[in-house]
Length: 335
Image (cartoon, rainbow, N blue to C red):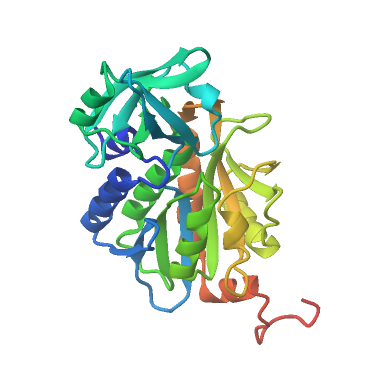
């Protein structure tokens, strides 16, 4: 199992992302990176640069799931959904209940008089209590990863985890590079429950530039292309930043497709943080999306990784100052 495959298997219900966070910390330290965390659980690798400017590349750390809300006398568990999924999406799904020490208890979501409950094989409330399961324990879908083709992967919540995987690979490729700025790459906690972690992560890192990696269904999908958001309901991206990415893509023969999305991302807060942070959202296209599982073409991930690597290698402090609308000595008066 590769490092990325291992990442796909780890549970990370919003507010209980410990397994993914610990795994990323281990991988970041293995690459020789410093660790930056906020107090909600977001985690980033920091590659120190020559100047105090900071670039932040973020993805969601967490995933949708559930929380045990009541132990019934018949041994079944009531629960509430956490994240973006309606409760009905859990009907008849194989799940895993994780106790406070993350001991797993496999189960299935059943319907009793249209009420959804989790059955972990217990026959009474006292039996559930003896197992150590209690109110507040988290519930995740049973994680399964399959390769439909060598480059097509299907797994649970890839929508959130594929950006973390891309970040790990990008850090590995850049670990020996000398960059003029600090580079922070990682995952934002509490993202699917209202982008709460975006506030604390941005306040901790204090970026001068932010690139948000999202995975979404896209209209008119094209293989091996990069998708850049021109608009969603929560963010108008920095135009100079977009133009720079377009120039890097054109110069290196990378297809860059402009898109508009309805839903927002962590960029909604990031671009409004501090004195304003130049921000853009780059989408990894999902070939298929169901409430729990997604299909991703790894050729698309490699394409975006290439664009990011080339852009970061070219990016200068002067570029970031231009994004901030600072006037440079050589600037034309019309700018």
